[in-house]
Length: 248
Image (cartoon, rainbow, N blue to C red):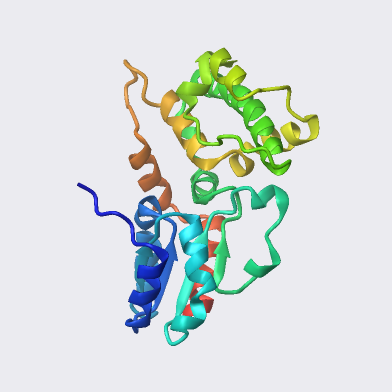
């Protein structure tokens, strides 16, 4: 049975007793990704770094707000921008110790650096694009709702959102009160979906098109993230350079 993630109170208490430079990240997927950054920091001759996955963005931010309780420890906090990508980052989180992704999430930055779409052939890419357009339409609606203060789920799996090539599932759409999205927001998201579409949804959609029965090579989510995290590109390198600055 997996060990439950630490609460923000437990993390703060642990850091009070620590002297090891620490990077606090959102969760277990981030731990797998940031292991590569940990290795790179070590090769650059930096201090030994501890990676501490928390139980989500809210936990990381709560620990960040209590950072003065463990000011003797060098710490960095890494979180996804999520909806801040659209609404802007609150002033209280504009701080050198807090590193935000360039895209919606760390998965977006990885996807963009590794150009993961190239694992699909031409026909698969065309089918992917058709599904991606429909999902971006739904996502634009959900984001606009959230920005207007109306809570909507953003974490549907593509298999739940789609009932056929490029076709949104009627039951899901009626259940969430779907309406045609704002044209400007849809254009923004679809024209640069690798940055603006929720990263986990994007990776899951890619897996759907890279793992169907009969495909010569079938990929899963964990394998794609491992491939991507081994290919340092501009976005992940920016995070690495921020960490170097913090722990220098």
